[in-house]
Length: 136
Image 1 (cartoon, rainbow, N blue to C red):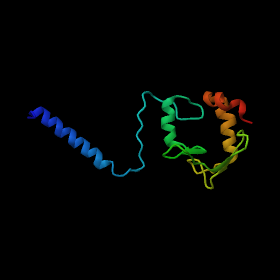
Image 2 (image 1 turned 30 degrees about the vertical axis):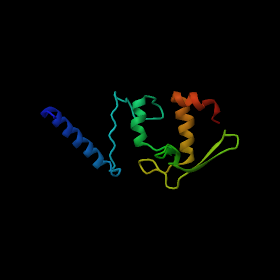
Image 3 (image 1 turned 60 degrees about the horizontal axis):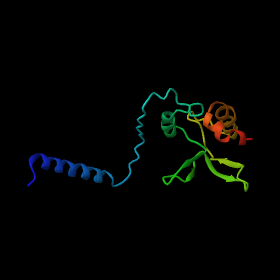
Image 4 (image 1 turned 30 degrees about the horizontal axis):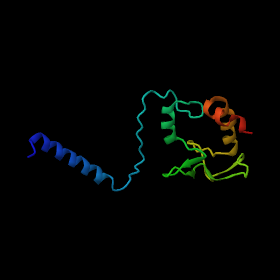
């Protein structure tokens, strides 16, 4: 025999599970993303900030040359395609036609070069450590 408290708990759990299953029928993409971070990110420039919270937010705001699909495979973003040299040391990115900044200014290869050489390599410690000596 189930007592009142146990019966209520069982019904509550069943309804909770049912509501999750009903909402899990299809993904929803309504244009909103809510990200909880444990502290103030301090700034939202991913080129010069290395705090973890910043990357959680900026990953939803800014595009990169390459993104990841739902299976975490590399996917086109600002670059529509890319090639890797046979020795694996040279990457050639082809920018997507119409790629632009948030203010509508077209993105150019010079902008990408500037970002790597003048921002990431100078101010972003993880980029400098991981690829700094290899970028020419």
